[in-house]
Image 1: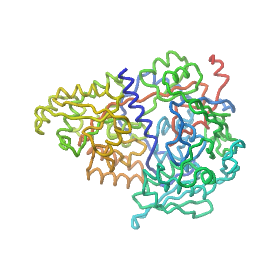
Image 2: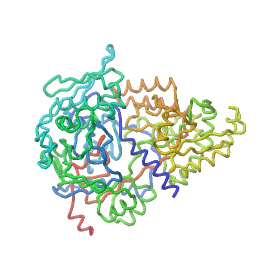
Image 3: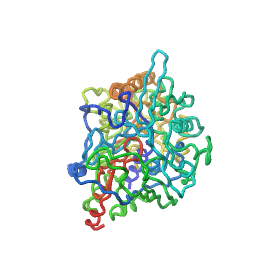
Image 4: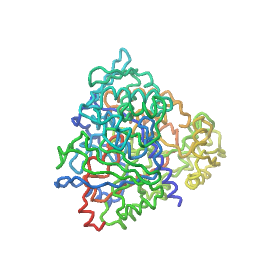
Length: 616
């Protein structure tokens, strides 16, 4: 029971990270990027050999030509409640299939059914700019002017993209299948960045005053202060899903969020035709979609292959698993390491792959409140936490131990500082080995020979797990009180800095690593960290990343040496989940986000004959 509760905490933190990002070469042309060279980096422990073999078989290429037809059935555990592409967060799968971004991940640089370059696996949220390619924008380029302290971002909008036509939809009839224009892109950017309460408005205030102009018939230019350029590349390119302005002008205006699924109109590969709350969403093929298959036996074919997609809403995890086992759904994310062996056993022939972490939970110590103002106390708290025992007891020895300030994922290998890296500071490495004797010594040196009393903000679902840590800390004289709050109340107290320890918090998500959201921010929920070295370090990281993302990652790795030695948090082990899918879902290799949205469905095809031969 305890393990299940802990996993719910970890997985929910991962889902919350659907959000933000970074850079490589200062130009992205359609399907023509030169993939970045992979670095030799220490990889954390992988799962057993059986799983590795399954993954290898899952991406074995086949010369068979893709077939058209079939309906893909997906599942998600949460209700879809928001339908405005600018308001965010978006409702799971749906808008990733209906509305397009200026750019997105390059399918050909992933596994692509065994035919891709393999520079990434697209199995998690990777916003690495040199893995991206043009989508609505044929190309995305940016430049810096250090003398004027300005940055310029230029989009060449692709010609020949038309909004999908759904005769049954009044909103669709407003656009009437017209061509998507540069003016549309400008209107979408302005609405997303200047509407109070919208996600981009709240998170990237620098873009509220960006100079956004049409500098050619198909060209959009954005000018921002230099320090805001990487945020502009990130948010405008990868968060503004384009829709016809006439839709929000009729149904929401420029300042109101549209909340009806019937207003969803885009240029993506599928059209949302029905949504039954608490039941399912139905999408059908957009026969006017512009993209052709870029790689493999189907290269040059008109996409998508599927006739449609159905998304079932099933809140209960065991019911979702049963639906997958019986072939009622075709794939599912988020299976825990505990449940994965049973799924393989009870669903013969099913395929699976690791779904890498993008972030992990941590315990933030309030660095502006005694005793945590003293680095000796913070170091003692780490030494008093038996991370390896937690890993073995709760995660079968499969968890990442070193998850601060970033977890490991292959696509971000350049920024990860592994514990066994020769450059990992020795003084910080020792903190990851349980040593209550040394912890007591440090507490005595800091003036707490008998320990102290403290409290932690946490959710009710976390109590079982943190009781283990509480018990470990008693051995060095630290008495921990739980202050259990609901999510909203906990967030308010944390953001106000009103806590000793903020437990079940989360570290920096990989998709916006250069922003340092858990380190270089005014948000006090991050342990009230105020560190000029870190602040200056992130400025340098962002300056490098906007020119060359990989160089920015290497600078981040260098800054990590300082960060881990300050012991600002007690990291908590975290383990990846598994994605399962049936082999009749062809050309699929466990992808979750091809870039920044759920948009892999147009590349896969459905093998009804194989499904029937397997008895489903």
